[in-house]
Amino acid sequence: MIPFHEPYTNGLEISYLKDAIKRRSFSGAGYFTLQCELLLKEFTGCPGEVLLTSSCTHALEMCALLLDLQPGDEIIMPSFTFVSSANAFVLRGAKIVFVDIRPDTMNIDEHLIEAAITDKTKAILVMHYGGVACEMDTIMNIAAKFDIKVIEDAAQCMDAWYKGKHLGSIGHFGTISFHATKNIQCGEGGALLINDRTFYERAEILREKGTNRKAFLRGDIDKYSWVDIGSSYLMSDLAAAFLLSQLKTTTIVTEKRIKLWNYYLKKLTEKKLDKFLQLPSASPDHLQHNGHIFYLHTTDLKQRIRLIKNLKEKKIQAYFHYVPLHSAVQGKKHSRFSGEDKFTTVKSNTLLRLPLFYNLTTKQIDFIVDAIYGASIDKKTINTF
Ligand SMILES: Cc1ncc(COP(=O)(O)O)c(C=O)c1O
Image (cartoon, rainbow, N blue to C red; front, side):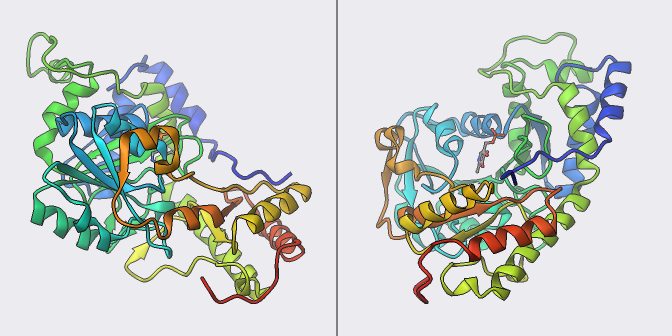
């Protein structure tokens, strides 16, 4: 069986965990949490502060709290995204306004955002699919023009860049995931990049159940108490110790994944599979992705179902991604779609992700590409992508 994913480990984790035990550092906001936060601030160039969180979902929930959303406030985002991108804001009573995606990157179409803005719009959430950046210059200009905030759901973006800036460090807030499925992982975990530092003090309080405990731990105050709403959004220091060991090897992981990603593209192109499958285009120079996902598009849903079945017969796991949120039961309740759904549904129906993880070998990729070549999918030449 070639699995779709295998969580990355580097063998260093155990010594970091032993160190955490020796230090008796277990709960949140401890020694390893601080080390991770410092490392992430330096690595990403975050102009404000980084807070480690229990998940990217919780980092998104913190953004919703920091925006002080009122029922009926609107957040613009793509429908082709993970449920947490929307759910975090729906929890605060916000209405989600979806706009269509670009068919080349599956990211929000920056040219459709302005038409979706109303006097209730509080923020634009962008999601950089597979670590390939949205057009952030255009998006930040729109946000400045209408005085609204930008949240980058950079869940998949550790070590992914736009014009030399780390994804998640460009908007007002950025959220990263360290879930086991991500390039760098600690099982469950995340980070909130607070790029606009004015939100930092409140963010510390929200993460600590609405108390000013962090200021107390720093010695700024002599006792801590309940000063705001909040929840427990802290990562355990044990998980942070595990994460720190992984963060130290980030660039090695990215290099290997990019190599595998490029190998897929080369092999599929050599077999001329680009004639009837849409392959990802090599990134333009100003976008540096991190090899998080290798996906292709079939001509239609029927072809995708057939290809997944053929690959399964060869013991290869391949998956689709995101059912568009506006088509889901909860999506219908809490959202509206601004403009036409020209690409979101169609392109999500044809997207297929191939196995990609640190220990995948080029030999396995050869086997996968041969399996696609031999699959019983429609091999008519098409140029319609
Ligand atoms: C785009 C996106 N946002 C948010 C999340 C949620 O991340 P977490 O599992 O760390 O809460 C994911 C997880 O896969 C994701 O892909």
